[in-house]
Image (cartoon, rainbow, N blue to C red; front, side):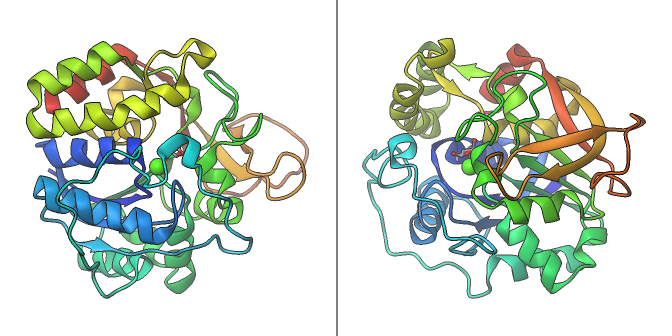
Length: 315
Ligand code: BDR
Ligand code: CA
């Protein structure tokens, strides 16, 4: 069973991913760390605690950072995730809940040190907590088993960007943090828009989940409706793209994906801010900022039907 720290900005598809982790017998959720992104940090942390309470999660919730490393925070995408971050679906039974005292980056460091080589960090929001952990304790990069992120858009398939023509939201929300995470010596896999836009949960799929997956299925169907409305047939998508849950699926069954290896950099200024670019291992160029960087993986293909089946069966 794989130990997981889930770094998240819930977020509709974050909630889908969190309940997927909780339901999977292959995964053991040891902590949830929150970050700003789909909403401000108080809202994303409140939502993580709400999901923990409503669905009986055992893992502690650690509150993360409220802003990117060096730039002001982008406005919350309320037109995607609603004012409350969960599609403005009513949060019945909401109680005041307190996160753990330690900040998220410190919890990542402490858990990595207590379980050396055993934890996979699944990060599905802006990568700021991960960068703060690297700053505070660079050795953390040698203590995790793997880092799997939902983020980036490499232009190999699917959509090249979703907040700009070239930038994906999680990277665009903190490009400096993302560049630091990709160039640190821990093994990173970026499950990017290239594949996540190829996996769609249709309204019929969500109805079936509601029928078969108990209270979690009903909740997921409810929050999926405003998310599907946002996609609203754009790019031919009827339903919800499976972003964050795809990163979880990668941990459970990497054979669902095709990967490509190479060093990764993030554009941190100019009109391509937040673009992710991989120099494929073995390709020859002149000297560049991609040289002498760790070789990381990106996903370039996905078995969409297999992923959807895994999610439904797990739930
Ligand atoms: C990513 O951005 C967020 O809006 C989603 O939760 C997902 O993590 C998709 O670009
Ligand atoms: Ca997210």
